[in-house]
Amino acid sequence: MTRNISLNDFAKQLTDCPDLEVIDVRTPAEFREVHLEIAKNIPLHQLDPAAVMRARRAEDEQPLYLVCQSGGRGSKAWEAFHAAGFTNVVNIEGGTKACIEAGLPVVRGQGTVSLERQVRIAAGALVLIGCLLAWFVHPIFLALSILVGAGLMFAGITDTCGMAIMLSYMPWNQCSTSCSTDRSCTSAWEN
Picture (spheres, rainbow, N blue to C red):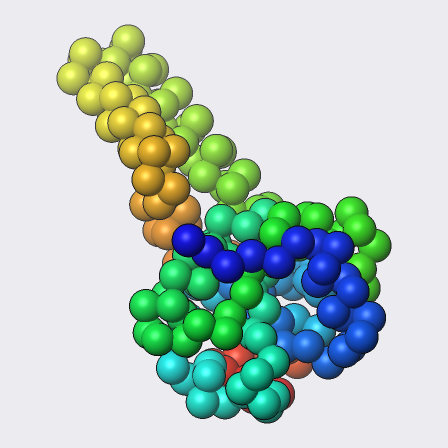
């Protein structure tokens, strides 16, 4: 079970200790759009828990906080740390969305389309293409729509989305050389 911290408790911690260590596990594009002021970006698919823990600047008793868009990827990151034997890691409930709504200090940058929206756009396009091809070309193309529907059901049941994983590797979701100046794309805690 993921160890979570409520947004209210996190906000109190942030007030008491403004230099908390927070990892944002969203894609670099999502991070560039908006992120907690103190967060560093290490995308979930690039996360190496051992390297992060070796490079920490704080004492071991201070928790490492994880944040994503709404909590799901943060939970997966927490599981990766836990599986690697690191237990002093906490997922921020509600993610970046909740932090923004609570008025916590954030940095806003270049807008982007969230990974969740990209999945909905891609899935909808594939279903539409499959149906149109089945209607106008051959019924076998219904298989495309069926596969996408099955994939979405699998994603909902397992909370693991293959399409989101594939989209996170797309060039528009990657970091350019200029983004390293905004605390993203660090391999660990290097500035």
